[in-house]
Amino acid sequence: MRIIADLRSDTLTNPDLPMREVMACAPVGDDCYGEDPSVRALELRVAEMLGKEAALFMPSGTMSNQVALRVHTQPGDEVITETGYHISYFESAQCADLARVVLHTTTTADGILRVEDVERLIDAKPRGANYAQASLVTIENTVAAHGGVVFPLHEAQALAAFARSQSLAIHLDGARLFNASVASGVSAAQFAACADSVSVCFAKGLGAPFGSALCGTQAFINEAKRYRKWYGGALHQSGMLAAAALFALDTNIERLEVDHDNAQFLAGLLSTLPKISVSNPNPETNFVFFDVSATGLSPREFSDMAAKRGVLLFPWTKGQVRAMTHAGVSPEQLVSACRMLGEMVREVRAAQAPLEPADVADDTGWN
Image 1 (cartoon, rainbow, N blue to C red):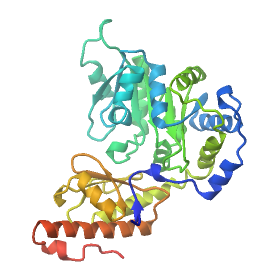
Image 2 (image 1 turned 45 degrees about the vertical axis):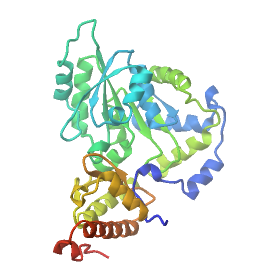
Image 3 (image 1 turned 120 degrees about the vertical axis):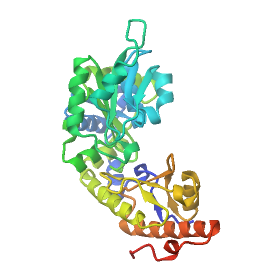
């Protein structure tokens, strides 16, 4: 089967030839002894970019988040977050197993966790010495489950001020923080200043094959190194991977704007298709969610049928399918993918019932 477009995630990017050449020539050492020069260069660069004292090269964003939770909390502590954030949505089992914390979540209309949300969760239960104590707030930027929206700087600043007044730490899951920076014009350091710790990912839109970085104070990172070792995330000659991440920071941040433009283009194409409703018709970054309920197919069924035709998508929930733009997908591929999806929807409708006139018409409007 020929793949027309792989839109499942921006993790599907592959290192290009220049990145591979940098990896092949990277100086390496044993990072477990702090002797890998490429890793050290990456950690110094990321810490400087985010305005933090220190950084730690990590295998994944999930490990970065989980190590951050372990450092910030004690077993039995409560972590306040939003229901759709990655830490709650995809990492709840890890939070229970590794840090042994309780997640106290709320569902917001737009994915932005605000001061009043945190206040409400703190006040929702007794806080005597014998009960769970809220010690950490986690936020996310961009907010993946809400279409990749940017967490506004002023909301993050307000939340940071409130957290300090309550002796709460804040961890920023910045897996796509550079997308947020490019889309908003706010520097990554300004966003990071609102949190005690922040993680960023290199293996999504930035196009590196591996890795994340966790940033914070030097004392925080010293403790994080211990848990990275405990969790099996301390690597030896990892400089080749760090060199790819460093190359991505040097060359691929500004390129993220292309992904954002392509997401706008994709949303427009999808909006012309029958029985499909785009949930975020004006995406801020590189996420497009669309509802396929009117086709009579579940998100899984729709995605499986599309995959057989060479268009790879991610089935979400409640009728929603997710598509993500990235460096591996061109506008021409998006046009071909949407044409194929339109043909697929018409075939489904034909099998279900006589076609309506709107379904028979040329619904593309583009070439």
